[in-house]
Image 1 (cartoon, rainbow, N blue to C red):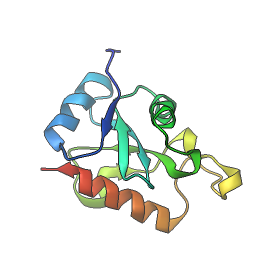
Image 2 (tube, rainbow, N blue to C red; image 1 turned 120 degrees about the vertical axis):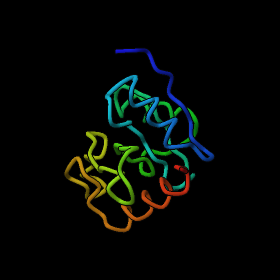
Image 3 (tube, rainbow, N blue to C red; image 1 turned 90 degrees about the vertical axis):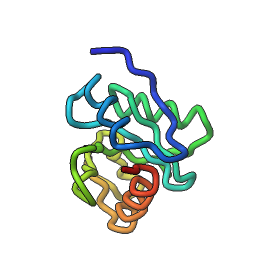
Image 4 (cartoon, rainbow, N blue to C red; image 1 turned 180 degrees about the vertical axis):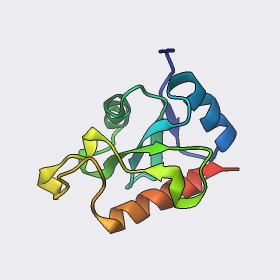
Length: 118
């Protein structure tokens, strides 16, 4: 794997830039961790846990960050896959790798759709 720097996305990022990052790691997807409170995400890590640590070091709180995969070539809600080991949180009533709470999924999609342009 190529060493790709984790990037804080707190403003618009193009699909083309996401495609570039995807091509360096996984081909068609970018792992991302979204902070639903701050409205930002970290991308570019090999593992969601790397991005999770990146956000925690920058003041995010565990209860507000969720792991997803972004597929830059897909449109709408199909662009986001809710699948990450960091999402397994029995203490928050989330017992799977998915994000089980529909309201949380909506918040995550709103943030991704705001940040990803093009």
